[in-house]
Length: 322
Image (cartoon, rainbow, N blue to C red; front, side, top):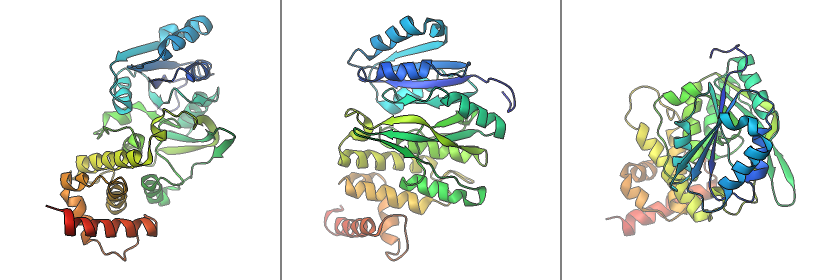
């Protein structure tokens, strides 16, 4: 559907896995959206609890008129990235929004994002959000980047500051997913790797809504973001290298053109910080790149992290490389 047409269909993709404590709150916030044209896609990723039963109860008892709009996909547990990809296969909308089933949404979130997309002709619209902690709610504001400073957006995304790769605060024109995309394997920072590519394809058709519309729950101990730090870093580095390797050698401008240095240094740091030195064996060019890079050259890494990275890889090459 072309920009300017009223009420395009929006597909909301929701992976479900062991969220029985939160699914009812989430489902009510989703089914109560004021926007009239929504397709709801739920992917049961082999949940071990009664999340799906609770979801169906809320739907059938409180929102029975929405049942024809609901698609449920059942699959064995394959992890969050695979669940999202499976959900995308069911998308019929002009726009897609991927959200997490342990969070919740403001009732007009979809309506506000669609209105902004139609008003500006944007292919990707992102908004601010609330971070819900145990004892307080924090309002988080995403940075806004004029077109002449778009490089800063990509660099901030890579380093996880000022602007983040979260799927759940971004409405994306579905056609962007028709482009060549490298998809992640692991759960941590899987959204960053895909979002970076979507931003590349969106070009200057990106818009920001200066209002928090999503509630990001930080109290779910089972969430991917709550796993042990060493595992989070390992999975982050692995996903980043899958993306880099998937685009490496392709002709023309790519999502990483101009950001290779920041990307590789960040991925290398994750490998060292998680003691995942096998990543340097799998991607030997990563090791050679870091070691050949002048140590005094500024990097997006904080100075302490840069020192740890250089010293660790110097030791690795000297004593452990075979």
